[in-house]
Length: 339
Ligand code: SF4
Image (cartoon, rainbow, N blue to C red):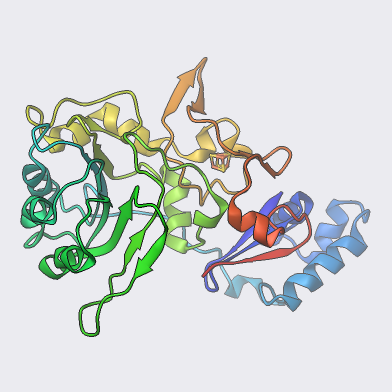
């Protein structure tokens, strides 16, 4: 299958492979010349599909193609580290405040903190204290249910305006609690799902978002690992919390030294075009699977098994959203609206 990423409307359009092949030629040849290339075997199909793209508003005919050059897909970032994930299980495993200071020093923009055990609001606020005056732009918090009242939990957001997401996990009945008027816009989301040590983020259709910066980065880097650093529950520095290799304990090794090491950065560069199976997948420039990548006989493979098979265009474990929509695997032109 092929995919059209409409970055303006944030939509994905699933298309047959042959149409994808035709569209790749469109910068070089006119429609009539493309029909020639296929010895006029697919003239009707080409006309029908191109007409459909025009009808859907993702294409138009022109006699002046030079006026529409291909989108520039180079990518660069001044940030040494863009995102970090840290697991907190015990205050004695490592100093969370020191990790936040080190991440700030690297210019880290986004931080996800996963509290794997119940911690009091008092302790959480104290650990996040160094983030208050940092350059972090957003903090996502996953807190294990600690029995404290919602008013207490909202204190975390009030005390630290960088907290943009607050999820209480292992919490029984799922529900959302909205803040009182004039008390900010961060909701508390309760979920019965636990957040465990080394939890991987698997590829999921509902997480794929079409945007030019993501598409550009994915051409050159592994978008799930690039400029990311993680500290696991024990305090070891890793590319991702579920990966086997570590780069020292954060109480003895600096995060800067780890992320500057060639072995750490190698994982940033292993993008999906270099990885078996992923290189044939229509989602390869959108996929946020942060699986480790291993080399075997000169070929790269993802270590975690992906739920999607690009050769049969099938999701093995359907997501709830897929089940509800039922059109994810429709080989016809199916618009995939992103909220
Ligand atoms: S095959 Fe690779 S690129 Fe495709 S969804 Fe799975 S992990 Fe992502």
